[in-house]
Each structure stands twice: as C-alpha cells, then as structure tokens.
Image (cartoon, rainbow, N blue to C red; front, top):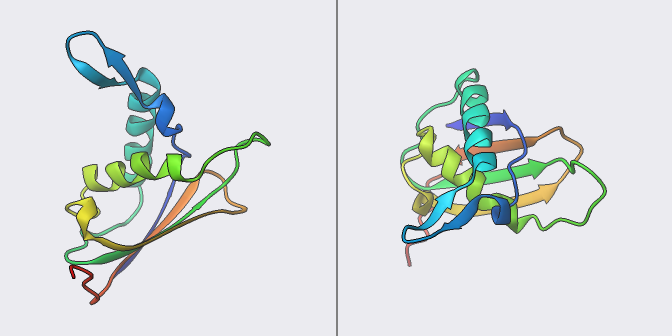
Length: 119
C-alpha cells in the first residue's frame, strides 16, 4: 500500500516544546496550531493505516532563504503521522528519507514494505 500526503511545513523542533516549571516540557502554541492545521489537511486526503514495516520519504519546501536543518522537521512530521494513524508507531519506519525540494509545505510518501530491519 502507498499513501501520499501534502501537509504544511512543520515548525522546527526547537519551536515545538517549551520548558514548564514543575511539569518538565510542554508543546508550544505554535506547535499545537500547526498540528491542528496539518491534521485537518491530512483528514481531507485519502490515506490508509499502514501495518508492518514502512518506508517514509519526505520532501520539504524551503519557506525562505534562511539556513535550516532538515532533521529538525522529522519529529513533528512523524508524530503527526502516528497521531492520524497513518501507522501505529514510529518504530515501524525501517527506511526514512528527507530532502529539500520544489514543493509547498511537505510532501510525504508512506509505503508498506515487506522488509523487516529488527536485526
């Protein structure tokens, strides 16, 4: 099974969590807003629930000319995919690729695979 989703670009990981006295860390308003918008956009697109190992390929458009780290965008995107039940858990991801590309937001392709990398 193969699924393709187009979502808004997530905030960088450094903007997703804040320190909260006596409670540790909490999601920021910016992150919660992005999650709601991204979830709404995902629900308007056809996707299935992937069972077993999956490959995830992500292409992200650059929002501006500032230097950015791609790896800071992974956690919010993978957490959202788990939240909307595109797959059960991040541990199912056996092949993960992310790159900059000529897209608006983030284009994500999820493919169920027979490969199992639990060695």
